[in-house]
Length: 63
Image 1 (cartoon, one colour):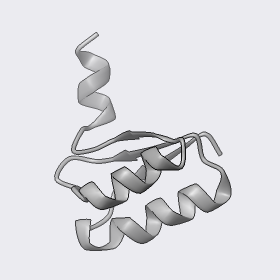
Image 2 (cartoon, one colour):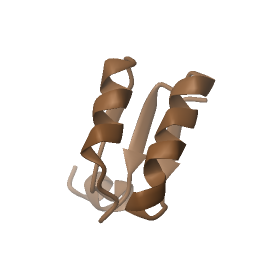
Image 3 (tube, helix red, strand yellow):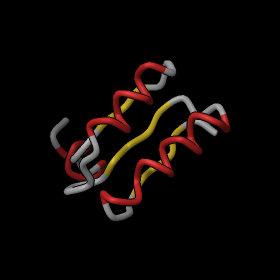
Image 4 (cartoon, rainbow, N blue to C red):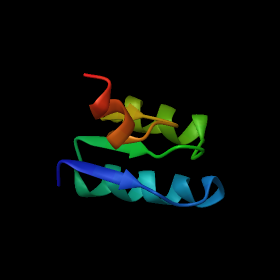
């Protein structure tokens, strides 16, 4: 798995990020308004790329 796109409530995203780490994902992307600084820190500490509070479609259009 390359990227885990997290489109869940902020209260639930920590578990999703932990699962992404466990399966060897390369990155986690937390969608707009999905915010969990501790989960992002765990992902980064595990070597993942972590993006928080961003929408891929919006970011893509900025290019």
